[in-house]
Image 1 (cartoon, one colour):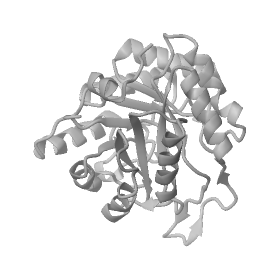
Image 2 (image 1 turned 90 degrees about the vertical axis):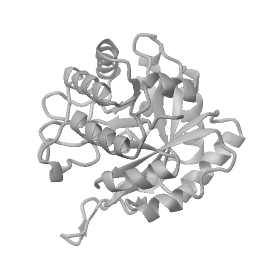
Image 3 (image 1 turned 135 degrees about the horizontal axis):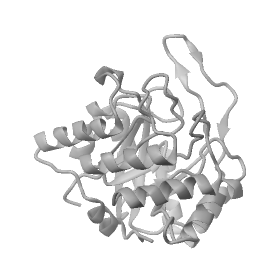
Length: 293
């Protein structure tokens, strides 16, 4: 793909204490998606949230309303979450996706699968303590196979989320056995706080890229949980990758209180300075053979 795909992770489970511009309601999510698309984003990833409290919402209606409004507002590739870390039962995780995918008007094009089981272990370095001590994100192979089969059966393409070298090796195995189909869109998860991932550094990125399955038809994007993605733009693009950024991962206080669209605009500015350009949603759909509606 000639252009660099910019994915926006617009809210995740982020609250508004650090940045008031995190969108929660379907109306806010759609407006944010449209502004990000105008700025140069091709993919929007969102979590349904309670409009009043910001708590995670897992009902299909909340997801359907967000997708419907995004589609009415812009032409980005849509990827909702499966409720990582909030729903233990695999059937519960994928239930909302199956329901909204049954209607072409609300069917998303991508849905993430985290390839492996990990401690949810955010480390607070300055305080010298873990913010969470007892959460495990459980994804045994049987769960991964079930999620992949169910997502693909709903007419949605799985996005392979890689947290470690083990995740990259698992990706190769799932493609080899036919559970995941090429071309694959993969997210390379780095973090400044989650110790289960590679660190959000160029070295952490290189170590994960090195173990991507040889010969696999794929595109990958890097994201940085709890860290500034900007220093990784050069290394990622230079290695043939794409970029996933958003207030869901980091509030970017170094920029004041930016919006997601302002983050995208800064990414585009840096890409232009490197002689590159943002990919369009149409290019991403074509490259990944995504089904719209």
